[in-house]
Length: 303
Image (cartoon, rainbow, N blue to C red; front, side, top):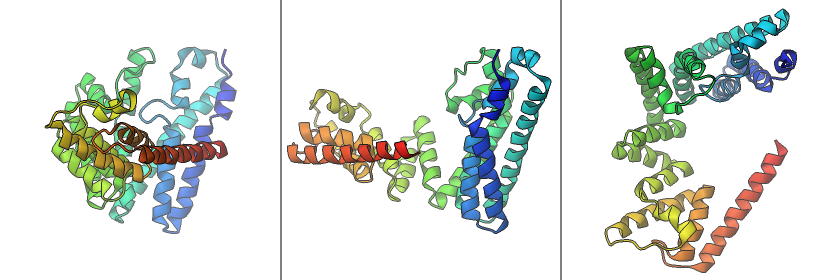
């Protein structure tokens, strides 16, 4: 029998979420809205640590055996915690809606994500239950599948429309997070022109991820990635300018600190893929990549 009391007392995500929420409320009171919205988002990240999937409280309450055999006081504590998390999420939704009216850009993104989660959490959990605890759907497909199974296609569309609208408003205010989401969304829908437009806007705001995504969209046959494993590959005359443009975006991403971009750039210079072969530059980028990775490893050891 699992120790439910231990699960209750050592749910660090719950305690981090609670602490962030309480701190956010303090900043909200004194109208430090930019700080508050960041803390509200952190709180939600801890309360729902895997996005749309269940948190520990959900998982415990879904286990019938644990519920039947567990101590009544502990079971009731989990039920109370679930209600507390749901109520907190609703309070944060109200705060985000207020902050949107105050034109706090990050609140648009926070609200877009939250309404999406709140709208489908229960239905998503139903899918997990139907599949014996396993979620077979990618996050982007969950809302469609969850609502479709309940024949709530119209409701699903409304949730998606509001979410996209909030992202578009945030993107218009140069939110990199929103621009990246919209770029990904349109790329997945194979509307590459719109996707590139959003990615370019983000890249012009110095988003390394956006620059890398543009490179990968151009390099749709994966010549650049393949070069890192197999050396130079033969390109047709038609492919050369496209891959050359991809390399230019890749270099931008690398200069902005994108580690995978750095790795690929090393091999582009080493093997002369769409650039002039240059062993010195390859070695220089290799050293930069190593320094970045070492710094990241050191940072991870401190948290």
